[in-house]
Image (cartoon, rainbow, N blue to C red; front, side, top):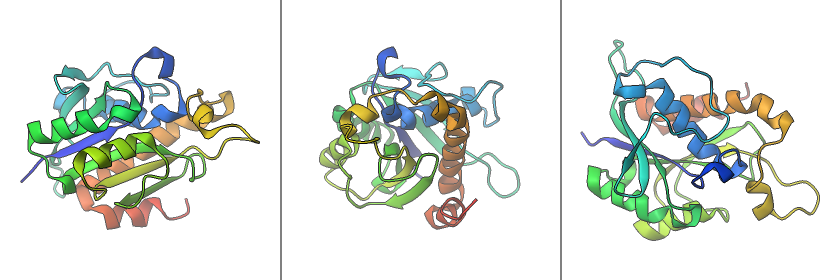
Amino acid sequence: MSSWLIVGLGNPGPRYAGNRHNVGAMVIGELARRYAGGSGTAAAGHPITTTTLEHLRAHKARAQIAGVRLGMVQGGEAGPAATLAVPTAYMNESGGPVKALMQFYSVPVERLLVVHDDLDISPGAIRLKIGGGEGGHNGLRSISGALGTRDYLRVRVGIGRPPGRMDPADFVLRDFSPAERVELPLTVAWSADAVELVVAAGLSAAQQRFHSPA
């Protein structure tokens, strides 16, 4: 059975580490923390509130990666093999690294899952889907263009709309506010849980859980 590729979108470097646009990369950092070393068991540490790639290693496809057995399946065994990845290219160039990783690991498009920020979803909420438009998201646009398809899975992490007349491009490239950072660890952990459930039980089961009111 083919392995999974789980990609979290963001921009590289400390300047962007706490930006709203990097929440997808934060989720990958949290998953890598949980499964550090590919052991399939959670590692000690604090939930990530900035892009932290300490448990990932460099890959020639312009990405930081970690190979893991993601989640648990019935009977308590380790879940499916997956490569966690954060492109080290800028957001609008994400497609190249994603395509290269898919080719390197022989991952079919139906086992590609992309985690990204979404302006059209309330802060802290999560939505899951396959295919559809990119909603103006440059990372998704780059991936769709490189792959020649939009038919890949997505975990959409809500960051809400900018206040007043602020340009959305400025809003996503700003750090989460102090108030938002209080809830951010929960959002990152919840999003990581969603990724695990998609891989372990499928999109429909994950939607039933994560689209339902808390």
